[in-house]
Image 1 (cartoon, rainbow over the protein chains, first blue to last red):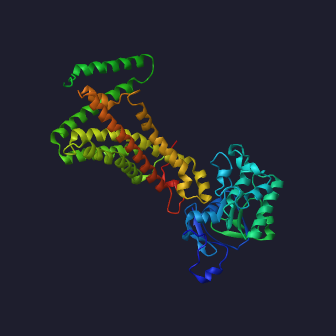
Image 2 (tube, each protein chain N blue to C red):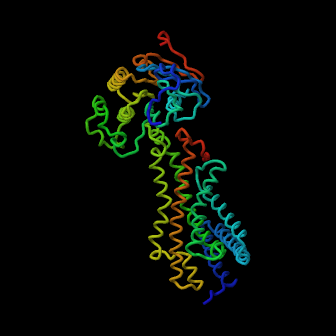
Image 3 (cartoon, rainbow over the protein chains, first blue to last red):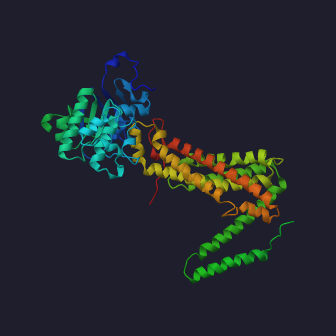
Length: 222
Length: 267
């Protein structure tokens, strides 16, 4: 199973575009169900420790879980895990780097796709690939990590506090980049944040993660 | 030429040296004297017992006796490898993996040596089979235990990094590749170094024993060369299989790192 998107065996599901969480439960949480349309951004919030990050990890299929996720009608369980994780890319709150310099972490090279363009927009010079990982600041890591995940051309992005280490100006730049990508490439975005104002700016819908369900928040509550 | 038999007085004199050391240790407050004496007594009793067992074994040369002795040795070696790991795979699986790795590293190689290289008839002649197997088990055990211990520890310590690599769409082999290769090196480097030092820095024990036993130095050296090759090959393949088997257990069929398979270390 090499191709990212398999033709669905059920013709009526062909129309189910977008990311669908079907009864996802893990570690005593859930079951969570949710439909996100292509190009839509859904915000997730909730108290610390309720399992927002674990929910993203379950969608990325790196923790054991019940239930399944579908992307454009294709089940996660029907696709090879590496293919799924490239298509539904999670950007963890804390990024990890294992080579000495930045460039080798980009699987296809930094010139591929629009990595360099994005890095330029985020204020990195063209030689950022030669930078030493050990000298990166937390904020630099966070921005580089986002570009690294985008370099595999995902269809969905799972963002865990993606701007927590950035100053206000850079937050605006990153928000603008993500908004732009979602709109132009119809990428799905699942955005975890404690910052309600940010979610109000970015998300089409906002849900509060509870232990057993997702509660949609209306504008009046905020 | 026949080896000079040692009497109780000779051994007693050697033991007296250790007692002297123990007394000194007590005098200067090292606190090692008790352990020294206990270890000395244990060594004497264990070796005397194994001497008796070997005497019976050599006299009978029955295949079944040799095989049961070999099995006991293998099971103990497997347990040692398993027990030496700080974070180990829980349950029978962890013990089984260690034992299978020791089986690969020692049993197969010993069998090969007995049937093809030494060519002793019958192949299970205990005077050859048991010492060869013992040497191989004892020497490959270190490498396999070292590599296994390192693998579980490193995967545990670097779990976030491994998961990051999985999240970027690497398969489990890629995501754990650096760590696995590192552990294989850790397991193999000691034996590679001791091959390089053999004869120059160290005179290996087996060769020394054979020379004392009256063999010509050249014969002894040839056996030592054989043994060194066997230990190196056995360690290498034992390490490779241990690393492969353990990492297969720590990634599930959806290529997730599942560390709850490891025992919890209590502080």
